[in-house]
Image (tube, rainbow, N blue to C red):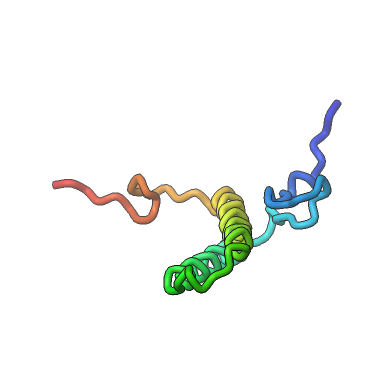
Length: 110
């Protein structure tokens, strides 16, 4: 009989890992608010980098910088996305009706 491995259920490897052995993982049993904070940190860093790039003139950049920038943005946004997925699964379900976007209670139409 196959029993689930509690370690692999608890620690979810990040998909951005380049090796077969997971080095960076998400502790799925961590406080959901701390998971959200980690996601926010990564998404904010990616947003700040994009804002900086928007303000710069690309004529000043070296062509070899572009893959480095894209790689950094990918890592930050992918890790942030995965952290948000885990936090969403961990947060208690609310019984209130929500709008389709999930950000605020739906408004009654009159």
